[in-house]
Amino acid sequence: EKSKRSILGDWFFTGDRYRVDEDGFYWYEGRSDDMIKVSGLWVSPIEIESALLEHPAVAESAVVGISIDGFTRIKAFVIAKQDAVKGDKLVGELQ
Image (cartoon, rainbow, N blue to C red; front, side, top):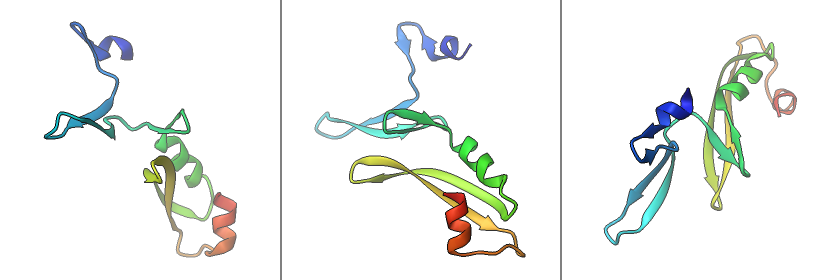
């Protein structure tokens, strides 16, 4: 079903976003969907956020892809519940 939606005439839409600069060079700008490619694997931020939310100390979570030295890495943010023990112990449990 998803593949059918990705084909329009002779075009196949991969979900990758590019831009063309004034010199005609193409630059990769990321995905148009919610998947992040990390070390050749597609990662769903929603799955990671859901896993973080299973921890009893986590109230909210968000996951984004960031570029470090040209490589995409996952960065997770959490908001701990008000009565939760915070700090290095929580960080260690969530990693």
